[in-house]
Image (cartoon, rainbow, N blue to C red; front, side, top):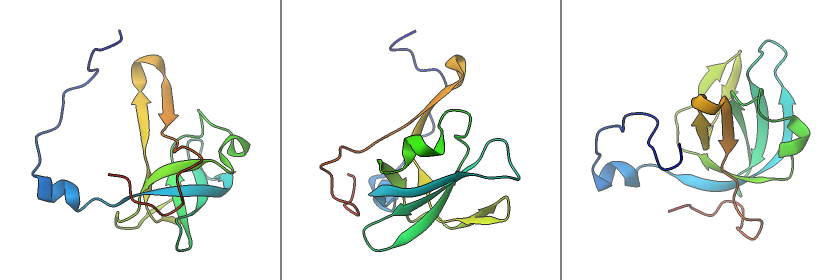
Length: 119
């Protein structure tokens, strides 16, 4: 139902905690399904300073060709982590809607320059 919060909110954080997060506009320049996984897509994005790999469990919701060229929001200062033996260098931002079995990536407007901070 619209307007309802589907899950309990996380505890409040201090402004200083939020200021540690570095969200940037990135453009997807390549995207492919991960052979060893049913859920992961491997995205290569341009963050305005270079390329980075983002692993995301959005394969059930997006085809690689639907993401190439799109601008997305990425948490770029998340410590890298390996998924399916591939190093992920950030996290894309998406809305998870389990009650609808859906997930929506948050896209940036085409006019937003790559690498610019999201605040």
